[in-house]
Length: 136
Image 1 (cartoon, helix red, strand yellow):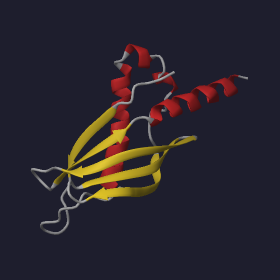
Image 2 (cartoon, one colour):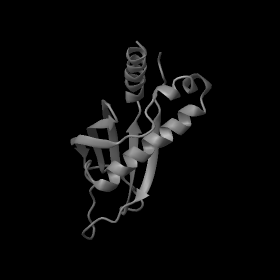
Image 3 (cartoon, helix red, strand yellow):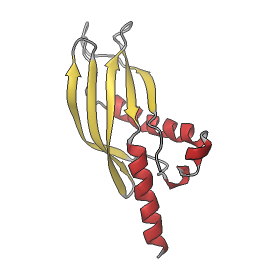
Image 4 (cartoon, rainbow, N blue to C red):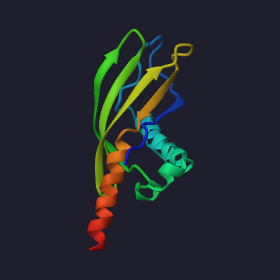
């Protein structure tokens, strides 16, 4: 089973503390983490519109409950882009995820978060295996 990687992007207004601060919010910022969770929900909706992926949507948890072990793995000052990794928790499942946070070039009070949804394939496999084990 191979699901095409989907990049979901979301934007939110973020009031940066301090005037003229030109740095993307940290990966562990509360607003960033909430947006990552929201983007997971959006990716589920998007997958449900794809007939091939809709077959597996039932195997995915409905909600990302928390993010832990959040860390920045790279920061590009020139474009204001922070690359992040974290452990995403879904009830009894945990997977590693990647996302980016980037400032809006036209308005540094805004930032964008992109969630790399490549982790969905592993999450589907975990859920399907759990379903098989639970049925025995």
